[in-house]
Amino acid sequence: MKNRILTISVLFLFLSVALSAQTTAKNDTALGRWKFEAPYAPEGFTTGTIEFTFADNKHSSAISFTGNDYKIPGDKTKIEKDTVTFSVVVEGNEVAITLKIESDSKMTGKAVTYDGEIPLTLTREVPNK
Image (cartoon, rainbow, N blue to C red; front, side, top):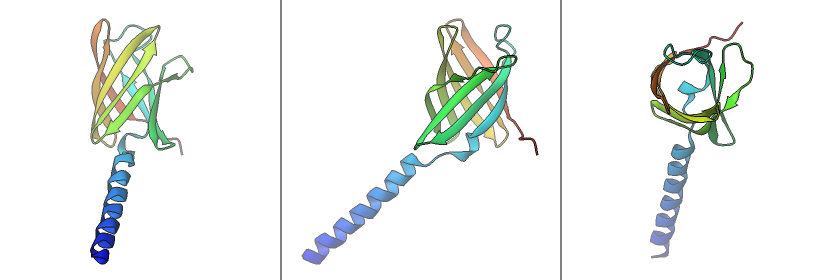
């Protein structure tokens, strides 16, 4: 009886560790710098970069617009399977962004603002060698 309880306890421990590791695993596909295009966005917000990172066991994001070096930190960043979601505050308005990972070098999605939806296309930025 003692052996059976010990065996079940050890099995439960291994299962718990395995499940915990799966829920905190990072999705490497989306990590890095991405150039984005939003041709229907207001002037000054049609192009820029979005960066996704993973540190301290959580994902984070930041967006910057072409012609402006300031990075706006993203909030509630989630990267799960082939979907990326986060929100940013731009000129006092919250913008919810949802992206689908199409490949290692492309994402598509939308930015939802108080004015409506704006389609987005992201391409991975290739680092200079």
